[in-house]
Amino acid sequence: MERGLLIVLSGPSGVGKGTVRKHLFEHYNNDFDYSISMTTRKQRAGEKEGVDYYFRTREEFEDLIENNGLLEYAEYVGNYYGTPLQYVQETLDSGRDVFLEIEVQGALKVRKQMKEDGIFIFLSPPDLGELESRLIGRGTDSVEMIQKRIQKAVQELKLIQYYDYVVENNSVDQAAQKVRHIIESEHLKVHRNLRHFTEIIEEME
Ligand SMILES: Nc1ncnc2c1ncn2[C@@H]1O[C@H](COP(=O)(O)OP(=O)(O)OP(=O)(O)O)[C@@H](O)[C@H]1O
Ligand SMILES: Nc1nc2c(ncn2[C@@H]2O[C@H](COP(=O)(O)O)[C@@H](O)[C@H]2O)c(=O)[nH]1
Image (cartoon, rainbow, N blue to C red; front, side, top):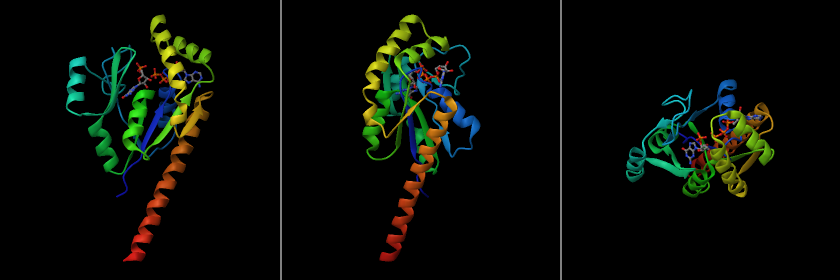
């Protein structure tokens, strides 16, 4: 069985990663599963345990780090965020693709581990002013927290070069369509290559 692909959607906080991901899952039949992250951040109103995140204490999170239970993790504006390893491994091994929605430091850690494997997509904002407006409009963070996230975004935008694709999120529907096309075309490439290898190997027998 062919192993699934790891799809990483990353970019600054507030750019619309979650919105684009939800649109993708709601409007299209996809062959990928979403990996729910773990965090030590406080649960926001409306967020559900095991749906939006697995909410954990710092001690629980640090235990998991020590026991190599995470594919990657990062400390981001005062809280830990990480990807549970077992779910990702089991899903990829079962032949299904896994979709991660994570910040830039974590994405680069995954990129380093996976070398040539994985699809790394950076979702970029039209500009920093619009990013700030989206964070304000979301209404989940204090003025101080929004400023910290914008400062992070300035650093993160300089790392765009380490991604395979950049998608600007002007319209949610168009951004989701672009992400979907990228995944489809990468999928074709990988599977075509594997079929090609199978033929070569069979000819050698
Ligand atoms: N294309 C868009 N145009 C206008 N507003 C948008 C667009 N995409 C997302 N938004 C809005 O921007 C806000 C931030 O979006 P969202 O929470 O999806 O960002 P995020 O990148 O997932 O943030 P975080 O990384 O902090 O989880 C939301 O209020 C969302 O409705
Ligand atoms: N490195 C990781 N980053 C993650 C993960 N899950 C979410 N995130 C990113 O953290 C920031 C802040 O999220 P918020 O929910 O507090 O707004 C944002 O960019 C998320 O994409 C993860 O598992 N690893």
